[in-house]
Length: 453
Image (cartoon, rainbow, N blue to C red):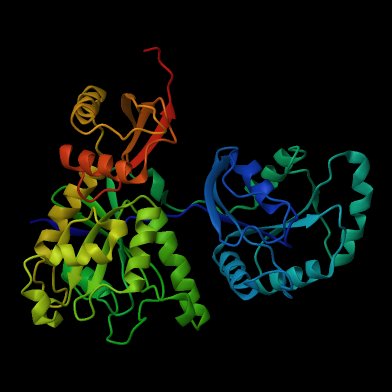
């Protein structure tokens, strides 16, 4: 069995962090730069609490953007000021370039000085831009921003698109040079994030797969403080294993380095095709494991559940004929996942991991012919039709699959709102069984189609 560790230089796209006070127009600018409405835009300070990422390009250069929450040190109107500040600080530290947005209507505000003090500490390139300058005649009002010690800034209107091209030119000029090949340019590489609580055995598992102690392991929780990429070539296929730091509940994240670990683990899920969700056999599935399962499902990723430390599983559980069912009842978000019982320490059951990864990735990437899908939906209508909605029969006209990774199906119907959630789950389960989609989440979209009877 051929197994080679690949050391080819792959790199991530440069990351540009958009920061500034609440309500200066960061999310509007983010949407303008990526060309789509992805970030929530409201005229209320503090609407964006979480970091939102997107890839874009300009003048032949690819880069990523992150939209952060508003930086408000006093946090008088913000329910979670400390968490938002932490998220911004993490995004700034992880970024290659910072885009600081000022409000041209409000003028210089005390919090602007607080942000500049923060930026000076990180010693990274910063582009200053003054937003809400809808016309050239308003530009003289921006001269006050020189009092912040800013030599150069770009007056823009994110709403109207004014001077956005100039801003993009400046961003591209400040980006670091590309080294190696971006991950997105890899062909045929299966990307696998290894997720689990601290000390569940993630690094031990990858060392077992590699056949060497390449990753540092320790019985002390939280040894892995960063994501570690390991490329493996095996039987003609290439796999990227992303070993993540163990994710703890937010209330237990006490140190800055562990906050970064959580951030990087979430980013790892955004990079991955599927996840290995490791469960501690001695503890069984916990509430935190269920949160990780929800993260995987929300990201639309394939999943394999690994019940690790089999020797620690209580006898009443290990002797149960339905261990899979016990796990899935507690991890409902990923109840579509196959379950493997393993011991990363001894190697028990680990020989099945690659075969299962190959199967789940194939299912995750599968495209089903439209003819087969429509034959399937006709049989469903004949045997188990959707319920009557407000005295009206719900009709399904046809179905198609526009996307893979995750498999996404569009059903054209006469009544979008009339299909209940339990019937949607019924259709998902039927699709999974009919077309062998084990291990992958299924997305259903209903669209209106009016036809004469």
